[in-house]
Length: 398
Image (cartoon, rainbow, N blue to C red):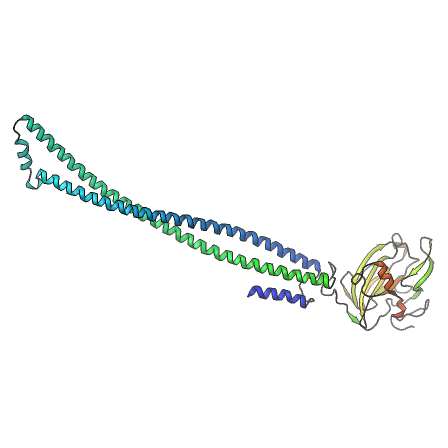
């Protein structure tokens, strides 16, 4: 039940992707790696416990075989004891016969009468020898009887001790087997739970990586979720357009004259702080490009249409990829100044190159040629005054 709840919660993240603990796709992948390591550790422990369980089973089998052998020995010993008891009884009968023969029951006179009733010295010696042998045999029979009793008792004691030891060992092995069985079952449950967590985590990662095209370090609570706004505003507090969108010719800071397609507009003068033209998320930052310097791209949803605004020749960048920005967010400050000329070769002085493209660059498409083909004149969507006419706020013309 607990495992099903965990899996359901993880799968819910796929349906509601903006409420997860990890902030970036990298975090999610690190969590997946941790789960896989946990699975490997669980598999190792499971294998180790299974081996211990196998060893206990082998010990139980050995003990069972030994108990079976012991039972056979018991049966054999019982037969031997019965035979020894019968033999002892037989020895007792023999003793009684000897005693009767010697007439012990009638006193010692019969023995003396037998000895001294000899006809001659030879007969006397013979009768004395016979009597001695009978007495010795009688003593021997008594000793054998006593030894038999002693042997029986010793075998019975050994048998009882062995039975007690085997019973104790069997009980210990049964307890160990039961505990290991429970432990292994718990490990199997944990392993299965981790497997399901891994599958669910992979689905979550696939959703953000494939469906929403989140960057590795992009905030997953924002990626694929472009904030909606009604319109664009100017990216600067004041200034003027110094170069228009489309074909143009100009002299770069390295003295080279250049004619070509201009995919945005240049704005110079006034406050150097650069603001986001509309609410959105930072899509990409390309540092120190040879023609464009530090380049920053932001995704927007304006009036239900997706756009990408671009800010070139910037410095002092205040945001990072994945950040949510609004119209009051200061993205950076103007570059294109002598301190950036060593890497930014396409500037004519301090200014902002501001561009607008349809669609989401770096997400819906990634090639530069596609991006430039989708560039539109920024003045068609942002309320700018005519070229070289000064503006003093971000909304109205004057």
